Amino acid sequence: MIATAGCTIVSKNYLAYARTLCNSFKRFNPEMPFYVLLVDELVDVEFDVKSEPYELIEARSIGIENFKRAAFRFNILELNTNVKPSFLKFLIQERSVRRILYFDPDILVTSSLKPVFDTLDQNQIILTPHCVSPIETDGLRPNEQDFLSSGVFNLGFIGVKNTPDALVFLDWWAQRCLALGFSEIRSGLFVDQKWCNFIPCFFNDVGIIKDPGWNMAYWNLHERVLSKRGNEWMVNQQSPLIFYHFSGIAINETDQISRHTSRYDLNSRADLRAIFDEYRTLLRNNGMDGFKTLPYKYGTFLNGEPITQLARSLFAANENSIRESDPFSASGEVYRWCKQGGFLGGSDSSAAYTSLTFKPKDWRVRLINAVLRLSLYILGVERYLLLMKYMSFIAILRNQAIVHKF
Image 1 (cartoon, rainbow, N blue to C red):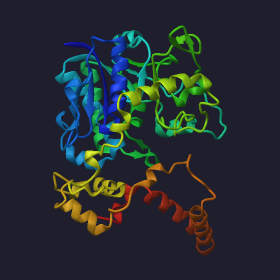
Image 2 (image 1 turned 120 degrees about the horizontal axis):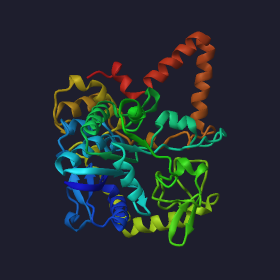
Image 3 (image 1 turned 90 degrees about the vertical axis):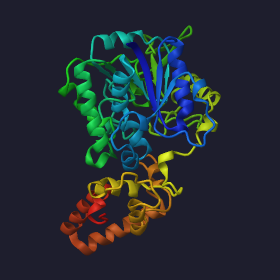
Image 4 (image 1 turned 135 degrees about the vertical axis):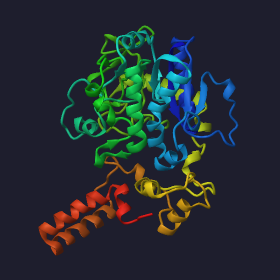
């Protein structure tokens, strides 16, 4: 039995992140194995797997039932997160790992993981909250409302011990991820993460780690300051930084901490600049520029036509009516249905449109607002409110199945 191992999950475009994380993990734990789950396929790619510091495993090989349908149902973010519990269970059962630590690929291990291993010895599951102190209500992001939407715990890290009860937990988590792991804040869902609010309620021996040196990231910078003591990174001048999570990092935006925050940048948080410069250099040295353009195998039909988010959402909503085992086929019923329904074409640029990129003076926004004001004038208050309720319902793409049936 393997005593302890680390792991992460990536698609091909994130292989530089996997290398960087693995190297940082092995710097402090050279004898421990590290596993990378590839949510993708190494097709037409010059990549020597045997020279990597980790064992690469393809997601299609870990026993997920009807994997191709899951790969079509979920977009790249959703699939990479929703296979997590299945991967952890695979490593426990097929690689006989006694203690497994999962890290998101955009994490850098910066000191000994012994405190993590010791904590996992005392618990079956260990988690880190997004933050452990209140955030000022000032209109900046992230804030406490964001965590109410996306989850109390950050599942960029989790530790699981090989016990019967932990395997029950992984089964429970995997079932929900593969059935309902959508990035769908409006309906209370957020991939694998939101489900984990239930972990301390449903399962025993759960360690909730409040040490500021664990999982430092843009969402807890209001309570954590980085400094150096000799060669060691310290948080709040008292706790060693065990790992930093560079979630939302932009490689070429040298002042940006994360595309998900408006609260800080590297000008206001000069304490972070050195570690960000170091991390960006590591990514480039590990092949970031070459990997980032590699196409996602499950992003297109077999004829190369891109699969839109609308097509995925409507497939998920109509899946019980669809018999086809390989929805990626360019000659199958799913492809014909998508073409006939007009669900294909264009790009999913809406993914980049968030509350942080919203521009109220954009002429398109002003036009829509004018149409809404006219609708209120024509319909009156009661019918207008009814229209808004219906619009919020239909804005969840899976709910559009009532319009676009298979």
